[in-house]
Image (cartoon, helix red, strand yellow):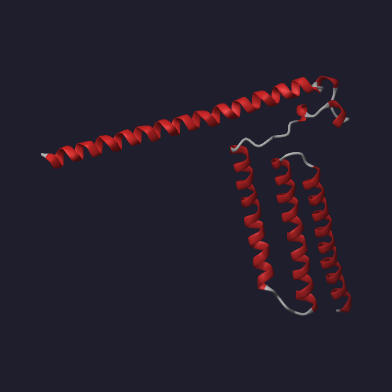
Length: 173
């Protein structure tokens, strides 16, 4: 019985250790990646897994060592695995809709990566031109939406004025 308890404690310790290693990898990914989307991927996927492994290890340890089953730990495992990906998906969608910078392999200068072939090299002028085109597209979309909203607002104001003038005419009669 003592050996079984030691094996279970070892499994719990390995799960906690593995969770901490994955958390460190997640932190490195958050620092290393270039844009919101890659960072959100690193923070959500691996952090959720690291929390899951750590909490499962803690749950196993306390269940074995003290014969104490924590419903709070079980609920925290469930809620973190449900809410973390959904929350980060909403953040990434908001970043995409506002036109956040999206890293592409061909946007990287030649000196920043040894994995680029000679065909994928872009000069700084090409990169600036591509960034300018992206910004023009974003502005066009943004200002088109603003113009459309302004027209709808003016139309609504005109309708309100017409309805008020009609109501005044009816009250005079």
